[in-house]
Length: 227
Image 1: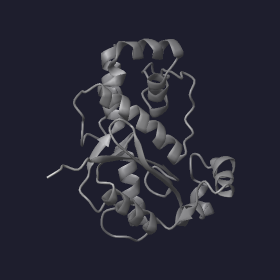
Image 2 (image 1 turned 90 degrees about the vertical axis):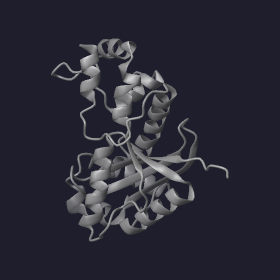
Image 3 (image 1 turned 30 degrees about the vertical axis):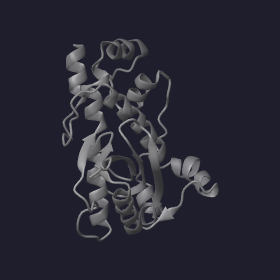
């Protein structure tokens, strides 16, 4: 019997709070090499059309600078939350997805589950038993452990006010791509695409994959190495 290839869904969410109210959700189904199979992106109708909720969003200004133009160009559409979740699970099943990945996956999984409950739905957002991969953890254990990263980070000023080397997705993509002035868009599909590229770079290193490790403050691994 031929063994089917198992794929990865790299996801990103933008939420109006740190706890729930996801208003922009995207995922890219890919393999470990970063070959894209499918992309999906929606604005969550119940949240995005609620002015009170959107006013709380950290990136609220993107409502007019990014999302309104995207809507007018037909690049994105609003959709009820439950339809997004149903389509997501159908896509995962159709494309044999076994891994759900995100940069700071603990956050994305948490706010997706909280939004599901917030909008009155029971059960889990995932209908299948998926491995969780935090690309942030993966990057800090592999690619960002390279001596050249710490050297470049200090030279470019990718350092916090407390003196810690920064390891967010924007910085990781700058290092992996060689585009040291890259600015993250902070919209879900755009961010998911760069996370696919970071993940693929990590897999190329052929190191241990830290499945299931989330909320572990991985930036400390890089700063301990660089100390």
